Structure formats: structure tokens, C-alpha cells
Length: 82
Image 1 (cartoon, helix red, strand yellow):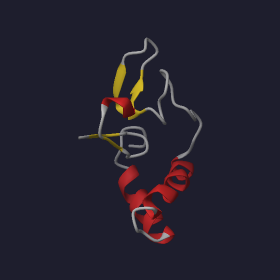
Image 2: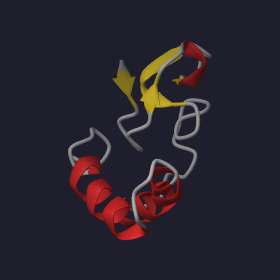
Image 3: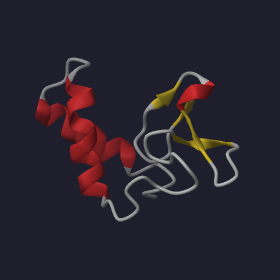
């Protein structure tokens, strides 16, 4: 399974893949980060992405601190942030 190379979200179906300028599927980024050929928030910093993602990780049972630590560690390895 592919994961978004911006936010780390698992892309479990084609509907979750981002789109290129021509409407074709972009398999590196999700529809939330890369909806139409560019990043939804092109000036978003790594730290802002971490804060954006924390609530989603908390829903999986992590505390806010655990979520932040996990995201700081994992997201830095993704293409957008590497």
C-alpha cells in the first residue's frame, strides 16, 4: 500500500490518490495534500504538517505527545520533507 509522501496517510484506494494538473492520478501524494497538480498548502512547513496530522493520530489511540513524537520521526523520511 502506498502512503502519501507529504502527510503519511495510507492510500488504501485510488480515490485517495492526488491528481496531477492533467487530472491523472499522482500515486505519491494524497487527495488532501495534492488535489490538483500542486500542494493544497504549498507554503506549509514540516512543523505545521505535524500539527495538522496530530488529531488523526490521536484518533488511533495515541496521546497528543505520542502523536507529535511519532509524526516528527516518521514524516521527516517522506519525499516532501526529506
